[in-house]
Image 1 (cartoon, helix red, strand yellow):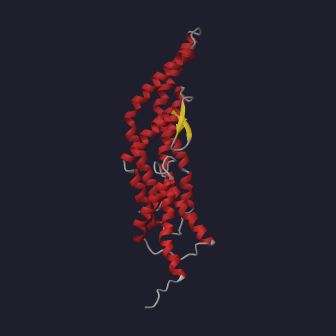
Image 2: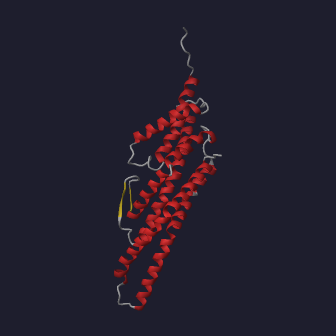
Image 3: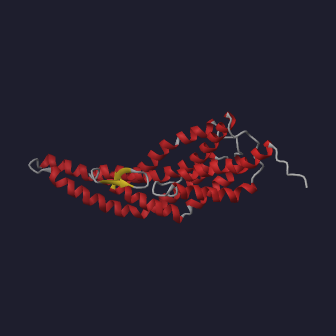
Length: 260
């Protein structure tokens, strides 16, 4: 029996068939909400990426044979990492819209000093931001967001083959998400802002008519109580608004990945 001949090109192609999808999928798991949180060990994310890669790689086209220790391989790694990180970043923005909304509401109500540590991101956020983040995280799981990102990254291998990259247009689309995040957060808290503005105007009128009343002593607890009441009333619109933001992020991801 003759020994099995294995050329260097075939070896590079076999390794790349699993390596390049693993890099893209692993980068997505590092940036996606919940799974990419700091509370989830890196070993768990690596195992999930490895499992998805083992299931997806046999269905993909043959990977090009590239030397793994050269400059082209490093450029390909950067391309795959960028694709995965971009997809995870889109859905991170979805959750941070509500974190920013909580920050804006807390500053308007006078609860900006009431902050706590966010274990998922390792930063300090206000109590209202943490409350909105927990709600949006639960809704993200209810709407099967974790399954959607896996489906998108698997479909991306057909629209963006290995070694293609996103392109400059996709980079500018990602940069434009910053303005979308601020505008969406402001739209969500705009009714609450209007109600608190009316209350502050009422206290301003009271201060002009009765200057002997200490408006700061009386106004702070009243503004806080009314702010909590208005926030409780606005929770009825939380689920529909999150659904609209989630659907917009899904459509944006398909456009970003050039999916049909």
